[in-house]
Image 1 (tube, rainbow, N blue to C red):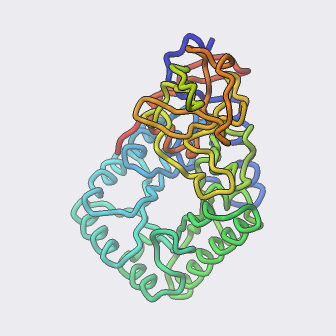
Image 2 (image 1 turned 180 degrees about the vertical axis):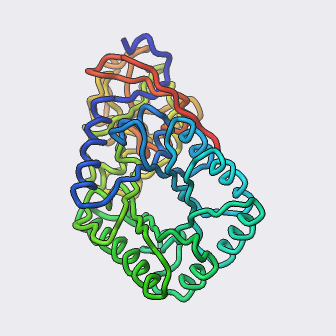
Image 3 (image 1 turned 45 degrees about the vertical axis):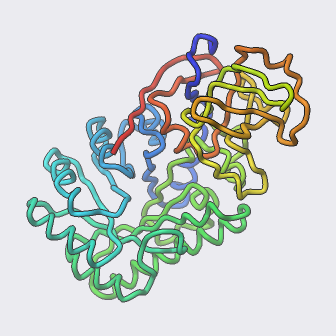
Length: 371
């Protein structure tokens, strides 16, 4: 019974999770690429095994804490997909000594030199991918830039391939725009790999990934692996992009009604930004969901309610249009569920998932944090 859960709490619908994961596995593998799930959102062994459809497999991480935790859980093929710095080499070296295969990324000559020098001191050779900037969103080297070949020369035989993250897909209006970003993503990495090979560098890995582009890409031709993570849970940003339906979102925050402000048409809950996060990722989309879309205890959106503001431990719920609320429907102690803007940010606020199946509480899965 949900009434037995202390609020706020992170709920996970296992059936939606399983459907989301199966859909992505089938799509990526059906187009001839390998799926390398990004586990930065999950941070949980049970979720990751469902994503893989197997006890272990290749994964992507964004922290070395994730690499360490998941290696202990049986996942040994790990890509650390954040720019590498020399100070972290010893942690990677220790994982290598314990039997892990950890790959890292760089996007400059300075980063490559620092990595090689630190690796030599640690007595390890770390497979390294060069990050390509496929859309001007964040980090990486532009396709065809001379720097790409300079970095390859520094890395030598440790060069394992190229990778990119099409973060600009999050700024699209819908599927058509995402398909264009996906093709730029694919083209940028495939062209970069071909250019490196033409210069005599082995470049076996061509890695792309974001949930929107993985969902809508027309082709993965020339791509060896696809990295994607938030698809496991989905969220309101993904729904706003057309990546999923509201009904596909597998996580929500369970909250209790703790007060009414009748003159303002506000409902107060005990789920503030400490439970929801401050993420406002839908703010620039066609439908602004505030700090989250409000549902009844069964997970169905109700009365066009959203969380319009969030204090540390208080959520302020109102109708999207500011209209009148029937407070009798939401007595003190009533349970509501809030769908998140950004699953990664909301999940990061919690140490466990309360797992539902068939709408009933069936389990508790631990998740970890930290770096």
